[in-house]
Length: 162
Image 1 (tube, rainbow, N blue to C red):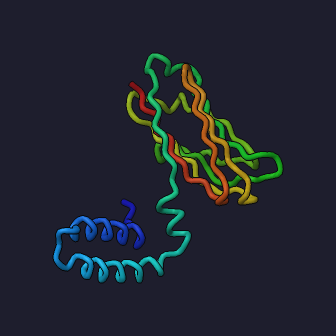
Image 2 (cartoon, one colour):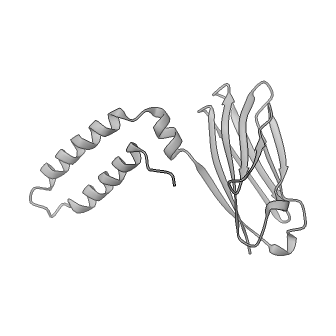
């Protein structure tokens, strides 16, 4: 089980304090101020890496028709020419496919079942100013996602077969 980061715990505390100290509270501003100072102290120790790792995952969920499970369901991950890509594609936490230098194609149909299949793409690309294009093509389904500007990718595609 993954434990929450200090940043995640701090944000939860902020939400709880904000909910508990409403405008009707007589000393709400004072209580909130003390909590805010404590939260600021914790957040100042959080690194940018903590923020990126904890809160920059993009997620999409797609519903697929079970009648089409035997047809190809292609996932592609690519960066433009001149950029490089490193990392992996993970399917349901088990199968890992390394990402190539600038593109990778995977047919995920052998991994699909009548449930949710989680496809996670994790890695880095350079230069950081480049972008990563993710495309999923299946019967009657086309999804395209593009992200860029950070040098890191953390993307999850949930494939729900019904």
